[in-house]
Amino acid sequence: MQNVVIIGSGPAGYTAAIYAARANLSPTLIAGLQPGGQLTITSDVENWPGEADGVLGPELMEKLKKQALRFGTECIDDVVTEVVGTSSPFTIKTATRSIETKVVIIATGASAMWLGVPGEERLQGKGVSACATCDGFFFRGKDIVVVGGGDTAMEEATFLTRFANSVKIIHRKDDFRASKIMVEKARNNPKISFVVNTVVDEICGDNHVTSLRTRNVVNGEIADLACDGIFMAIGHKPNTSIFTGLIDLDEKGYIVLPSKSTATNIPGIFACGDVADHVYRQAVTAAGTGCMAALDAERWIEAQGE
Image 1 (cartoon, rainbow, N blue to C red):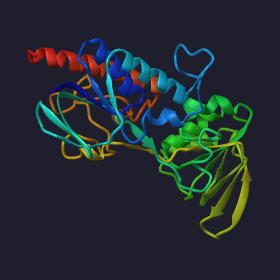
Image 2: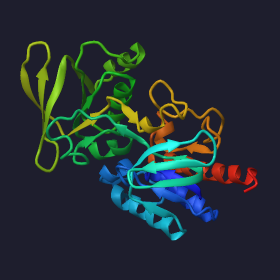
Image 3: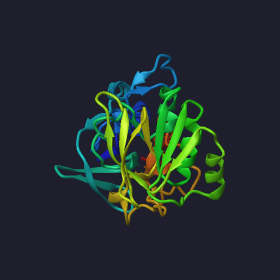
Image 4: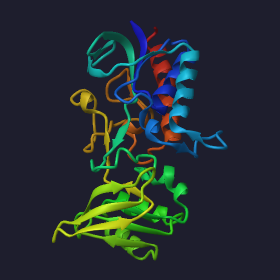
């Protein structure tokens, strides 16, 4: 019987492990499909506190893992397929094992939605991004593109004008899901222009984005659009499919935290990081809630008299 099993290995998961381990809870962390989370596909992280010169995403995650291991966390490279039980103890199932645990901390994160076009995966971190707040600084004086038609696309485009020379918003339709006030704000920004009824078919460049191959969905016209970077703003998908029917989720699939804590609707199951946060989605906020989840878990175990 384990005290705590943490599902997920991004900043939230590793921070939860560090705090749980320091509380002598001997946590087990199951890394998941993408050990290290989204930061492992990020090149430079400039906004992590204490890293004055910036740090590579994979390097930062390796540091967090090393710190978690130092305090006694057991890290398992495996993928959870099911969580069984509506009260403690719970059974965590993977393809190769079953683990009994008093407490579960869910830190499975959310995945940016991508276009799935040629060049996209190859150039991630080399001009292809899904986080303007994380990477906007690197595009100072550049010409960039934002793909999307919702509030997020308008917000990211507006934010990027702080750095970029120009921002083009590409949308597959000629109307927008975004609120009228957000669209008007973008239209009134002299650095922003719109390319509507258009999709991106390919992202081009050798070691960095240099252009996009676009297609007009109305007349089929193909065009090459020169740019220095492209930001995807077509949404995020929380990694919660295995918790459907067990944990309360909102309409977008994010875990609902009903109280002012990291506790879910199931006593003994806690959630932290992007899996429960569709607003901030930053590494540092994920880490903060990882700390909170570990503290909440520790207090919950104590309250059970165990």
